[in-house]
Length: 255
Image (cartoon, rainbow, N blue to C red; front, side):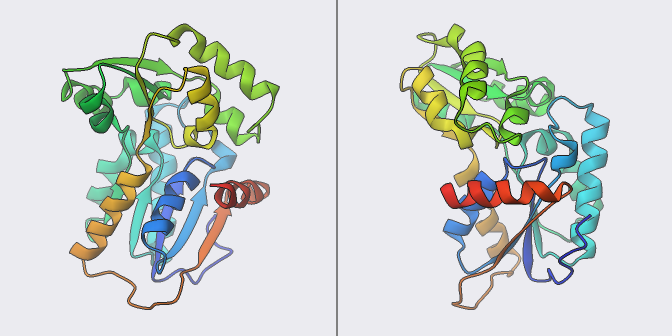
């Protein structure tokens, strides 16, 4: 695990349960093109959204340990479930490393809309972090939608076929006309954003990728960790299932 590319010093580690965090990675590379990024997806054990909280914490800590041992200068946990379950633990274990998590983009959605559908994994929706976030925006009705099997379907490469279409209709048809916006609370979901928005009738769509990238930039500045070169940075992809790396690259290139 994380051993094939040993020279990752001065890289920013980006971690996800699989392919979903590539959407966050893309926002980070757009905002910080001179930085080097090391992306690791735990596709062998995906999806995290249907695992126990303890297992998510253990898997996340294992990946963080490897990244820190390899010398990354900052870490982005680009997984909503892992952030909800483990980000505070990771920060306590590694207080010397800036650790940035992701969260559902409820603030911009609830600030502009009245009925906000939040698509997320069952784990994300069940944890205190989400409930505390939802309480902050009581002016809007927050409608949780547990999207069982969606991350796994995307992880399996069903990005534009009948398998994906059937599942999305099963999950979303009941909400058509009942929401005026949608929050994509799992980093896998922006990969199929166009299909989601089409089913829901063109409602505005929000995800946390851009906000996470901005927070990463703030933390790099705060800790004086910017790469000062003008040369475009490298992006390394690795996975606990090496065959998934081609999917990561395909998604990254398509975003």
